[in-house]
Structure formats: C-alpha cells, structure tokens
Image (cartoon, rainbow over all chains, first blue to last red; front, top):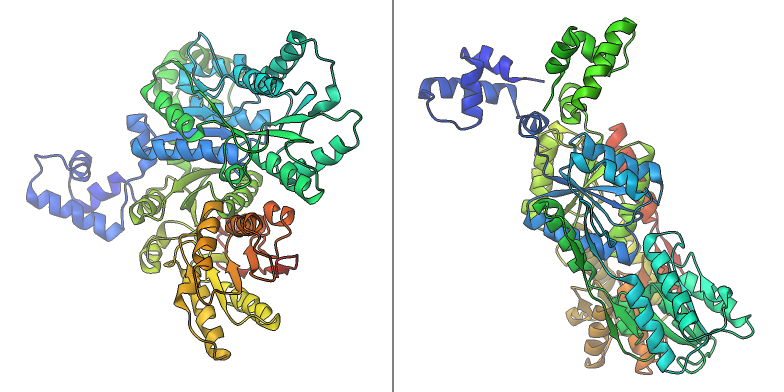
Length: 319
Length: 319
C-alpha cells in the first residue's frame, strides 16, 4: 500500500507538503501541488480513513446491540435508529447478540477500543454493573428505565402499560387473564410480570401461573398458545400478548377453529403493527421508530437523560 | 490519549518492547514486561484498534447495503448475513439506502477507504459500471445474476421463477393474470416483467398493463390492490404477489369482503414467510437465510462465483 512518504519521494517534496495537498490546505505552490497530484494518480493512492480516525478519534459509527433483526419490534426500533443516524451522518455497526453475553461484551469492547463513537443497547444480556464499567470510554444508551448514573435511556414504562391493560380487561369483566411474552428473564419482562402479580393481589384473583406463556415470538407461537389454552380447565378468558405477530397467530387460529373472539377469548396485542390493523386486533401502540430516533440523539449529543415514551391503547375488535 | 511512545518512556523500555508486550510476543524479560504492564495500568491505556487496522489493513467489518431493514425479505437476508458473519468473526456495517444512489456511493467509498473489508449489496441503485469501478478496493457481492467480471453474486433466477409460476397458473386455467411488485425499476423487477410479457406472447393472451401493481410492500398495499381489482372489468382471475405480506393483505381483505379464494381470485405469494403458512397461502419458498450466508462466504473467501439459489413452489389453498 502506498503511503504518504512514498508520495513525497515520488513527487520530490516533503511529507508535510503532501499532507497539505491531500487536506486542501493553502500555502502550497502550484508546481508542488501538481507533482503531488501526479503521484497520487500514478499510485492510485487513497487516504486510509483508519489513519484519519486515528488522528481525529472519531469513527462516525454507532454500535447497535440487539438480539435479532428479523422481529418487528427490533426491526422498527432499528428503523428509527437508522433514520436518525442518517440525519446525523453516522453509520450503524450491528451486533446481533441472540442474548449471548459474549457478543454484547464484544460491542462494549469496541466502544473501549474507539471503533465506535457510542453504543445503543436495545435489549441487554450483560448486568448493568458491567455496562457501567464501559461508560468512561463513550456514551451508552439503553431501552429501559435507568434512574441516576451516567447512562442515557429511552424507555416505555412496561409496568404501567401492563397494569393499564390488565385494568382495562378487568373493567370489561375479565378475571382469568393470561399473558404471552418472548423471554422471561429481561428487565422489561420482569416489570410486566410484577404488574401481573400486583394486579392479582389488588383484586384478590386466584393465581394461575399456567396462564403465562413464554418463548412467544411469531405466528406459530400464537398457534401453540391457543392449543394449550384449549386444554386448560378453566382456560383464561383474555390474553395480553406482547407481540402483534403472536396475537395475529392466535386470532387466525381461533378463526380456523371457530373460537369466537372476543366472546370466548379476548386478545390485546402490542406494538400496533400493520397486521393488527388488518385483523382488527386491539393493541397497544408503542412508538418504536420515535424511540429509536431518540436513542441516537442521546448517544450523539451525550446528554444523560431518562426519556419515557408513552404508549396508547388502540381499541379495535378483539376485546 | 496515551500512545505507545508514552508507555515506553514511563516504563523505561523501547517502543519495540512495549509493542511485544501488548501483542503477547515472546522474548521479553519478566522485569520489562512488568514495567510495561504497570504503565498500561497507570495510564488506563487501551490499544486504539484503528491503529491496529492501519497496520494490518483489516477491519473485520463487512458493509451491507440494503434499502430498508423492516421488510421481511431484507430482514431474512440480513439474518443469514449476520449468522454467517458471526461464524467468520466479522461485524456488519449497515447502509440503509432507501434506494438512494448517494447512500450506496458512501458504502462504496468506505470500501475504497479501507473502512470495511468487503461489501454486500442486497439491492442496488447504482449502475453496474459504477460498482465495478470500486472492485480494485475490495470484494463486492451482489444479489443478482452477474455473468463474467470480478463481482461475486448469489441470486435467484427471477425470470425462471416468475415464468414457472405463470405456467402453473395457466395450467390451472388462468389467462387473466396480474402481478404485484415493490418497485418497477430494479434488475429483478425487470426480469420478472420480461417473463410476464414473454408468457403473454407465448400463449397469445390479451395485454392488460393495468393488472400490474407496483409500490406493494405491506399488508395495506394488499388492501389497496384488492380495491383496485374490484373496480376492473374484466378483473384478473389470479395474482402473482412478490411478497407474502402483501398476499396476506389481499387474502385478509378478500375474507372480510366475502370474496372467495381461489374461485374468484387466486393468489401466489413469495418468500414462504410464517404468515403464508398461517393463512394457507400458496407461495414460492426462497431460501433467503441461505442466500445471506453465501454472500458473506463469497465476500470473505474472495472466490468470484455466480451461485444460483433455487426456489420451490409450496402448494397450499389459494390457487
């Protein structure tokens, strides 16, 4: 690879002159400038941007940690992140973790090693303590409520939203309510679970741990949930389903099996995806694109804030 | 920022010794090693990986150009790319182009500037000629058939698949066939359109350019297509729909309006997404995850090959 010293030698000028020409600085004679440009052309020389990063300490890259990209929740979040990053003229470096801590650690290490200017963690596997260790190396933003400390976050209050949805179902006469979730172990999932049990305490409702279905990500999971519901005695009369795709799977399966919605089973989905509109599913609208945009804003402006994004219940035909 | 020279000074050793310690080379005395490690600790020194890239000329990054990430076709392709990149221990740098040539050019320039080791273009806006100009700077792989030249590609033969599906519909008695597509201008779209008109020539069928619906990406577009079909006289009796999401939108709208499928309108979707299974939609299975994996393989092994991935018609209930 040709470097700046080779160019200087070829052009018969100093390294400083080559640098001035390459960076469009003034005070270079036309003659020397032309000699340098001739050498550049002859050697097909191109600035190595890693060298530029090295001198400026900026990569214009934002790291994004997310478990997978092929799920609408993360795809929409990523859409917002990508839109805002583009407006700030930054690119995205993607870490698909599949919830493996080792892959998340790699992202944190790249922040430490200055390969990215900041990091957005959409859903974390590492402990907060571990993430905080990497804060000295660059800004980090999370998608969960982080009060105090130096981490920014844009979040929705999953406890409140879950509780509101449960109260809504209770007012409609439901007391046997279940819920479907992706993984049980995340912070957001734990908050939802807490709301679920607090709600049961509040109204002195009988406990049915079997009404909780985890590993629900896609249409087929909705089919599986319904087949389990059908075997229960008593079955839940309503389900809070934390993904519209899973809700769509349940609704389509109910239609196939002539199970009447909402009379036999009421459904509330999450995210207000287009499929929920098509199938007339009552859902909770979470402005994921707006969340994504705000995360980028937080990382690049380095303003340490907790921003809550509010959600809205969209009443349609499944409750 | 502390650099390797500062460390050498602090530890009272040569720069070479510091470099040897940092890179775990042998032949360094315990005494000198400890002095260096002490300096590293005191200064919180971390290798600047951009400096490492500079010396090794490798970033372990693969650029991925795609119009958007929140569409199942590209999401599944990206899933395959991400899986394979992980196996090769490479990260992804994402360029969401929205089909804007300027954004695609940025990706090509980053290849030129050694910020990425290779580039995968899932759907291009730039001309082939322009892309070829950047080949000297690193490997590029495309998702379309590129015979000859130095560009690798993994592709499906859209002409053949479209023709096979049209013949399938013809054998089922359909002569008034329409199709739905995202954008009209891409290479794949042009090949599909050619198959469509060649099929009409072959069987001397009347031309109905109004049976071609573009800008079809999502459920709502399916709703829009159906409302236009209903106003036509004569309407098409079958539609080839190049996205299962759009096909699902058409099927759900037909159900709502008591339009009988396949008797009044036959549908063939594309991609064999889960929703197609749920709604019993006949579709064409395209192994997108496998395609994504192969693109990464091509970029990293630098083997210049054209690999065709075959598609399969999955017969269900909509034809």
